[in-house]
Image (tube, rainbow over all chains, first blue to last red; front, top):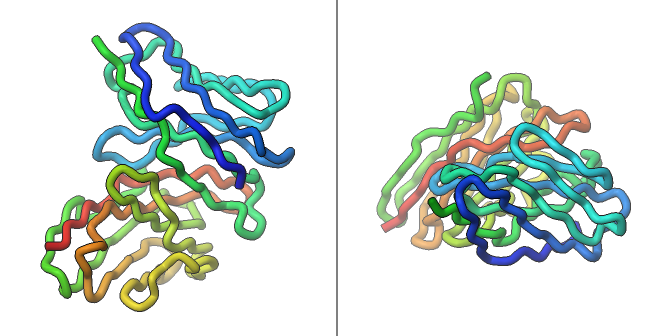
Length: 114
Length: 114
């Protein structure tokens, strides 16, 4: 799976949008971008994933650049409960062979301040 | 819908003692994963089950670790004997399988080996 690069930490004011960047310059054409987050003392939580089109769900939006070499996770109105480590992961979308594996890096610690 | 259930949440043991962790996946999920997360790191896959079959255990330290998933539902991960370096959070995740591979994680078991 392609390697990702994320800033180690970011701060955001409560109520403002949090924009978390991720670089994945070696991504392959069949690899999806997944985002998970991990709140302190909890297991990772799935947020969103996408291939090349922008995606939105009730938690967040995912913006993928046209060349797919980078993406941004957007939390439109951050709350204190969004303080967590956010992981950007790229992997092949189908379940064949070893493609199921989620390879976690160190992620970005997002701190939402009051 | 109930999420992935794990027990115990915390365990403190002395080195050389055995320990076991239990996981019940989301109902209907055929694929089950065990991950280990060391302090300050992202989770790392130990073993993956498709129903009752362990299809990838390449990262499981087989000299002291074992796992089973009888009847293809809940699973147990065992360490015998435990070593100081086994202190970590052990996470269980499940996915629907059959091409739908978004993984959902349990809260984890925090193990401290003294």
